[in-house]
Each structure stands twice: as C-alpha cells, then as structure tokens.
Length: 76
Image (cartoon, rainbow, N blue to C red; front, side, top):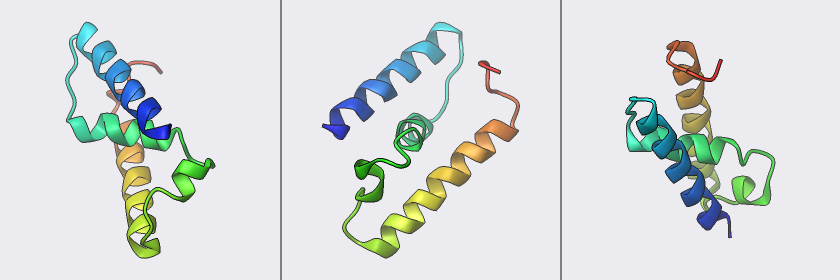
C-alpha cells in the first residue's frame, strides 16, 4: 500500500514542479515521498537489511536537508 501512495506522491510532486516551470532529479521526488513516511511502518521496514535501511534513511534525510538549504523550495 505504501508503494502506491509513494508513487502517487512522487507523481503529484513532479506534476506540480512541472506546472511552475521547475524540474528536479527523479530521485528527489522519491526522497520527498519517503521523507513524509518517517515514523510509519513503511519507513521503519523499508528494507530488510538493517545496515542498508539506515544508510538509505540517512541519505534521504540528507537529500531533503540539502534541498531545503538550496533556497529552491517554492513553498516557503
């Protein structure tokens, strides 16, 4: 179920960005969708391999933090 919603969130974010003339790497849309799932079962179980999961979660958090620091966040 989380896969469906992540896909829908990614598409919505991509469509919105396109509508305001912005483009970002596909990975950013995926990271943004995952980022909003922090604290959920899907987030805590995203990968069976604990070490890989923690690395991926850290990468996603860093990706979003870097995005927020660039000043390209149109919603602020």
